[in-house]
Length: 400
Image (tube, rainbow, N blue to C red):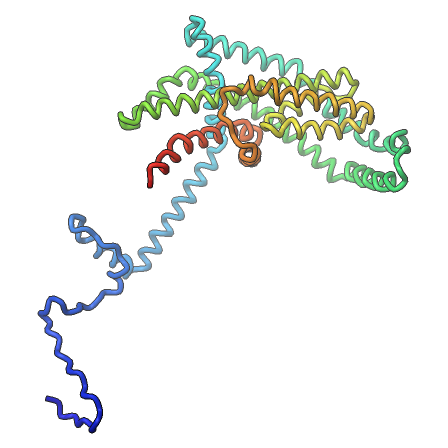
């Protein structure tokens, strides 16, 4: 009984019963650290919570462990960067083997053994490389020097040409200022040094490409000969119930990759041949050089032909507006034929990709790996889209 006096009229204080420590419904004291930890099932090691609390209580240990993890990641990244050239050789050889495999299988369907088919394919490839080195590369190198030698003279002759004098006065003033700036840039020592450095870089790249080419050829031969065994090893890693689905998807992806690579090289070769013939017929300079540039640029799917069309038309203006107009119209006609007649037949087995993704993939691949990245960007994107459509989307559809 409390001895505290209660004033008249005031409400009586509520009686508070003492808490019995043994009462099962009595609120227990809550550990703030334990409250944020996940509830651990009884069958899991009971020392889990103690170890977590020990780590939290020792921040230096946790920080040291995190630092070691970061250092390990940096070392691994540095190691991968140091062997990036070898990885590029492996990727190129793998994609070349996937691109050549459809040709080898076509020969197998005509009762040619796989080893003999591989020998025939590589013999034809070697002949093409020899023809390129003997008949294409020397005039291309010569025309590169001729191009940079003739460019300043061509710029100086533009203001005296008939088509320039026929332009309105304000157009002549603006175009003349632009030509003066271009001539000053070309004549600057920095530009000449950059061009010289670029030529040396290209020469060093050619030497490196020749040495790396032997490695790529050896790897491609190995991958092409053992492609079936490699696929079988991949299938064996999956559970037995998933192997039919994995086999079907892998075959579709490899067929699409091979079709895309062969199709891209075929379309680029046709572009180069058309450009070479057009330059000879129209009388434009540097036909071999422009054909090689066309081959490289048109490896970009969908947009490569348009990019080269604009670039080559601008370069042709330095020779003659009439010749540039003829090339502009003739190559535009070829682009339409390629888009609606040639490309659907050449790329009939490739997986369809939205145009925006094609451009994004080409830019990302070109930024990361140059021409090789542009060449393999489309097959990789097609493979990712196929996996999303066949695996990810069906699983999401089952979630209701």
